[in-house]
Image (cartoon, rainbow, N blue to C red; front, side, top):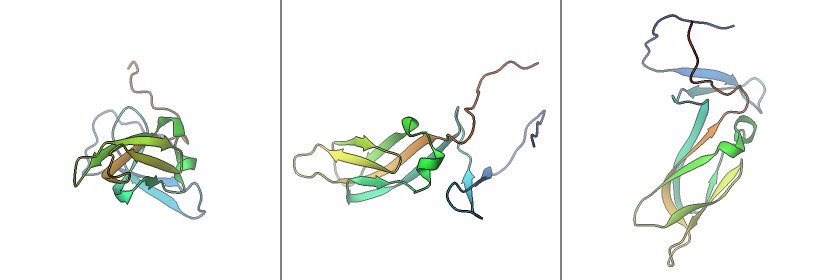
Length: 125
């Protein structure tokens, strides 16, 4: 069912339910991050680690080619970089000579592959 509104909808929050890609009788409830794509994110913190382990359903939900990673070091200056990306994990490298693990916050973004790409500009009639 489609719903078209000629006007504005105001809400304190926006969320949606989608079928869980792996578990029957389950759904995923996600809040809406606004942008020019149907994007999702996963965030967290690494402490003396080198791998971000993504949720097991991500490989069924996202286009692996669209994954981007933001890293914010904490504790001390670190020369962090993304070493490898897959749909199940991301390996972080640290080019510091004294330490090869990472202490950082991370945000991983990707575009959903289970729905059509969002068309952001279109003529109105």
